[in-house]
Image (cartoon, rainbow, N blue to C red; front, side, top):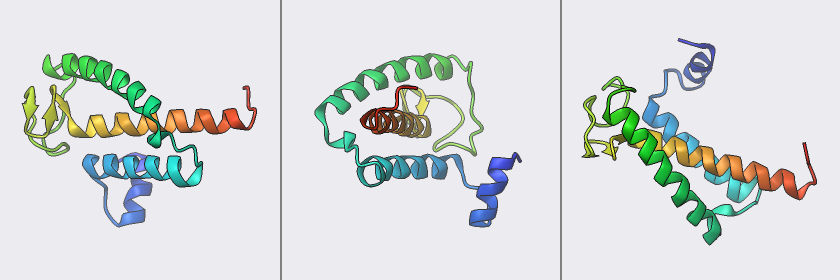
Amino acid sequence: CGPRLRLVSSLWGRLMTYTELAVVGVAFSICLDLFLLRTVLLRRKAFWVSYLIVLLFQLIVNGILTGRRVVTYNPADVLGGGSPQFIGDGRFVYAPVEDLLFGFALVVQSLAWWVWWGRRGVQR
């Protein structure tokens, strides 16, 4: 158990699952965008069009890597099972739903911080 997981463990009294971490990551990213940084990217059509482009390529790459079993998951760590399916059993285009949630959180946070720093004139 690494130092980050020990911290999570000590905060909640147990280790969080991959699914729980993914949901917390999405919730935090939404709050960061709408309430903390107030960049409100999630209310913009341009964000959703951009996100669909990112999602398309995420599904292609994740689908290839998980569909061909280059990357595997412990069945106890993801929704559904350990054998990749194209759609169903907690997977979409072979990708575990948790990967899609983490990807969404990553995109939202990257863009929200980019816009927030840009509004403050941070160039480096």
